[in-house]
Length: 162
Image (cartoon, rainbow, N blue to C red):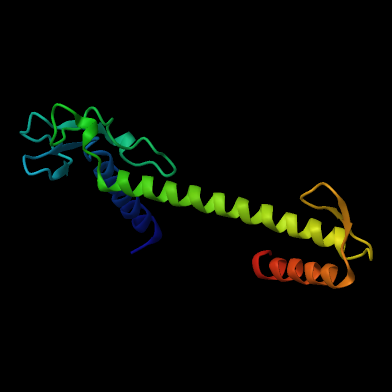
């Protein structure tokens, strides 16, 4: 087979595949049956509760609006659709809470590390360290107290800080 025949055959196959892809359904239909099972199809169903989703909204990489609005979906609780949450919504909330707690712990850890570093920076280089006691009087740390505080600060930094 010569090159011209191969090119012609390849072009015909390419356009046939392209035409077949363009002829596919442009919408997706979804509904929830009486048992609470969510169904999806590309053909119009007989179910009057079905919601049509245009195919351009079904999936686009990086998009977030691929699902019908919550008020359009039929839920088990017809009177209060917001009362029924999906497993995915619950999981998203759990993950958001866990992430929020993790950020709070990181912020607290950073605050403690900064406090320990500041303390170490203040007491390590100087031989005379003064502080104000509970009665408001100024006192001086002796060398043993200062060395103990330096070691304590270094241990806290080594254990908890990056």
